[in-house]
Image (cartoon, one colour):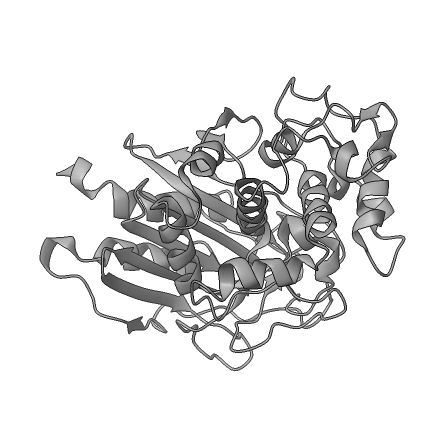
Length: 386
């Protein structure tokens, strides 16, 4: 997960506190000792102790589903969050982009060993960046060494629109973090370049490729990459509230529901639902989307640093080792007013997707990652605790 830092819409400030009693349950609950009381308790804590406006979680266990929420979707009206809520998924977008790249590799239309220069001639040069040495695999597993454009807030704020070429140009105005293949460093630039390569290979917009290859075939009706000029979230959705990643409890809260997603595009611009993400990752983990060779490529991981604790990174996916020792697979995403986790068992039989519509947390959690880790622990470590 990466904390994008950029201007957000100012919107309303001074959000009202959410109420834990505004808790709803949908779908069929699991029974007996295998219920989700611990998960629901954590959702309530996220609101009452973490200070978040609202949180939702959907659990899938085989053919059973459970959905719960706490808090609100809209602090002005008190409307509750719903199972149909769409939200910005941030870096979970990377999993969709990597999946499309791997499908193109399976079709023989590109190779993971192809360099950035082969598909984007002269596009990755400047300040010692080496497009002739950075291959597609390095882009997808963040070992290219290419500078992360979202680390240059000042440059991003100079422009009203953010086409992919501009984002790359901002990155290349800085020195690389390492030579290609020599180290791991999370860089949103890698996935902007991957998106550009998809469009170069297919001759079509990235949004169309994601829709045709993933969203439509797998029935992900709430999942899409917005057009660069569309700041809205289509369909039912919660408001997205941000403190602009400031940690002081007294800073104002802004409504960032509408924003310029072109700044994130292939790196983090997509919108989805909890149910869609569980369906997508369940199919992906179960090997229903990629052929075996590409599945192996995707889930071959490298060590990470300065990122999610106890994580490794593959091609657009990550593994996280939980405190109980269990390992889950999926991806997390964060941007203004929306933090999400979608992780599951390696076979895809069990999945948990959670989203908070605020980008802060109080109490014993440093940020929503702590809340998400506790949720995963409650779901996947029950057998370890008995």
